[in-house]
Length: 137
Image 1 (tube, rainbow, N blue to C red):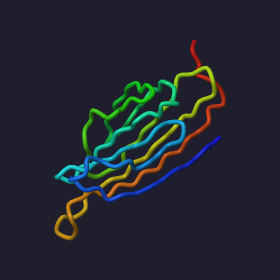
Image 2: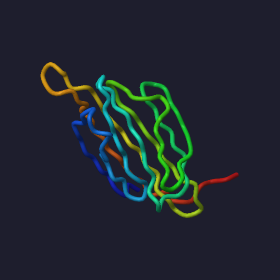
Image 3: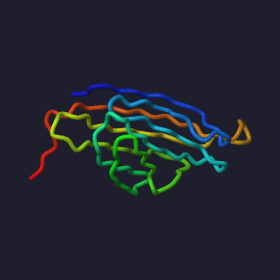
Image 4: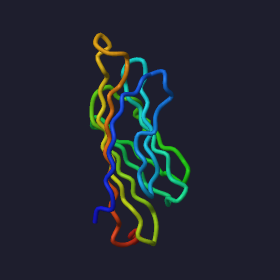
């Protein structure tokens, strides 16, 4: 059952440290940045109300994973990407029904000959309500 879908886009300049692009209910928020070469970086900051979660992020065919505790940050070790789509999956460890979230991030550099140096970034997050707690066998 889909609980919520959120989406947003931005043009991010290298001068900014990053912007909060999405607030994802019961999960946290996604921050995006842009470097001087037009590459986009992403960081997920967990909500203080979230449970400890598994995180898997796939960028350009390479996947990285980790654990995310409440109020912690997860930045994919694969580093910034220039053009492409990045996919996230976040699933909490809990006996209670907790959300499972997927995030898609699309990014590309803006042409510096036409516009100021920046990255065009859009993201969509879908939060699903788990029908049961984590299976542990």
